[in-house]
Length: 96
Image (tube, one colour):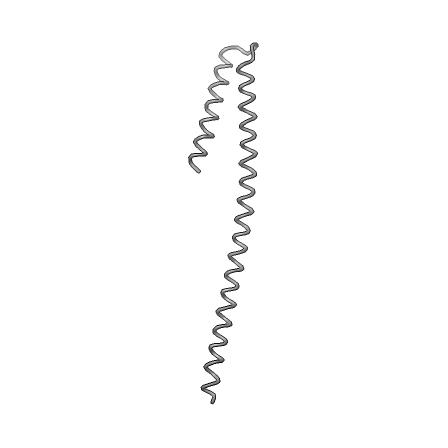
């Protein structure tokens, strides 16, 4: 009698332990995923801010290089810098 009662009790305890361990792993995975999503949103926000800054810098350099009062060597430097910024941005996009 004890033998027939002990086996189901052990199976029940084992099943409960397995279920609890699975629940804990799922909860940990859910927390880790939430942290990753938060980091991803923060990185996307930072990338958009950098894109806006690069666009503003490009516009400023474009305005600087096309202004008639700017000496030619400064205008050429501004154009080269604009090309360098564009190349760096394109290379970053390709690396991702």
